[in-house]
Picture 1 (cartoon, rainbow over the protein chains, first blue to last red):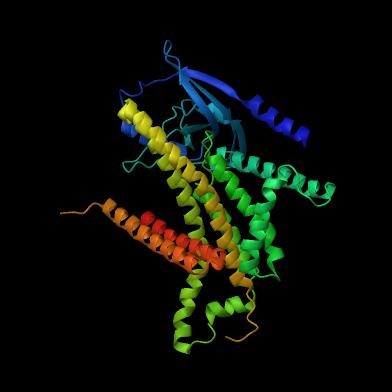
Picture 2: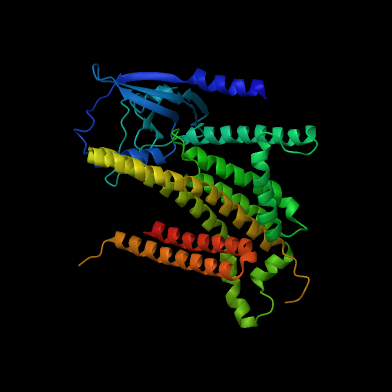
Length: 361
Length: 63
């Protein structure tokens, strides 16, 4: 445990780097402040190739210094290519690798192939016309997911060990987590899935609950990660629920979908396509709910903080502070609530899938 | 006169708000009548609220 902790911290701090270069535009003058805030929020909501911590501008020299952790970039373009994201210098420099040129478009944080001038062609609709290599990079979101996975692994393995050494009584952080785990078992899994089969699903429910909760809470820290507000992440989580539901379903579940028992034949035929669509709509609503809630929370928080720069007076700052403070507290509640609802609805769907209809109804 | 699209967004949010409010009202009244069943009632109320909210988000994304 100790060496692992040390290794992780050492890795993070050794890779921390400082860049400074001239900021080529005067902020606040060339662009109007509202559109700048909008751009900033949009940029934050997207995944990025470096773990941005903070930046400051030296007033004398006009140099902007970024403090950030660069992430490895892995591209597949006739063979794998590896380099660090710091080579891009925030989209200002072109990376040359085997006579192909890559450049990061700062507006959407995506890497494009360019010619030797580093030209990025943008169509009238605002779409980038350049060719895109397949991007397998360790981005900010992926790094955060890996970090949370490692954290959860060590946390819960050490928790399980502490029960063995302490005669089945929780100690330390286990006193905080034990009631939550018992709540998931007694109030989510057992009532929805049933006493007979709930044990098969407990591992998934606990994992998904703590994974979503930790990531949601991490999204509220000044690190500015937005993992559960990324539709690809929530899609994967919902896909897991979808697969587990349909792969462990018994014949009663499929019977209820394609040939609903206990209703006239005409209604059976009408119900079958609706129920079949429901199979896909259920996990789809899961993914949209988590994504939209977290995304909306982040947009609201950033917009309220942005009020400070629009009003430019004491009233704006104090208003922004109080509103952002209260929304942040509500967001802490939402972080827990969304993890709970995702787990709850997953358990409900598993319950439908394994329901035993031995008694006729 | 053309009605801007964002008005639809407002209407959606009003509808979802009324819906969740009704669910909360029903749940509170039910708990008032049957305080013993508060656990089951609040669980079901949360699920229903989540479903209504899901429809609201789906509609907002269609905007």
